Length: 134
Ligand code: FES
Image (cartoon, rainbow, N blue to C red; front, side):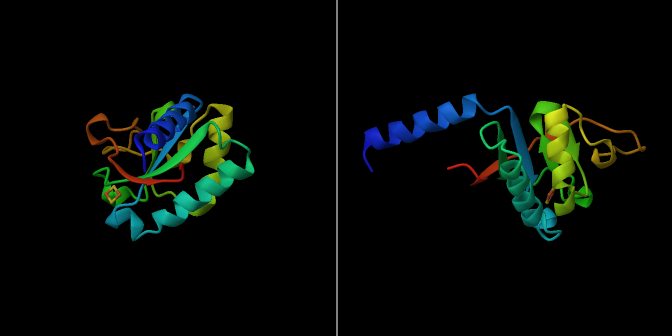
């Protein structure tokens, strides 16, 4: 691969990122993966495609978010929300929530004490390079 080809890939990626409004991070580390987070990721990707939102949404597999007992976890950066116990069947509701600008309250991560919380800042996702994007 030449330097020019690498530059082209980088520019294509930057251009694609400029149009991305919603980044969905699905934990695919061991704990969440054992609870089928891979199926959650696949279902979200399929729902986004079916909704015609591929240009503005990205689904990425990420490393452990540190909240393993609440998995599978999905965080949505544009809505500053983390969802817990997500099932593949929840994908349509999550994508509808993106379109409506309203997070899915029933899936929102509940912090200790039963209150809801935004994405834990100190436990943000760590991308491990698994992505639906080229
Ligand atoms: S394995 Fe998913 S949060 Fe730890």
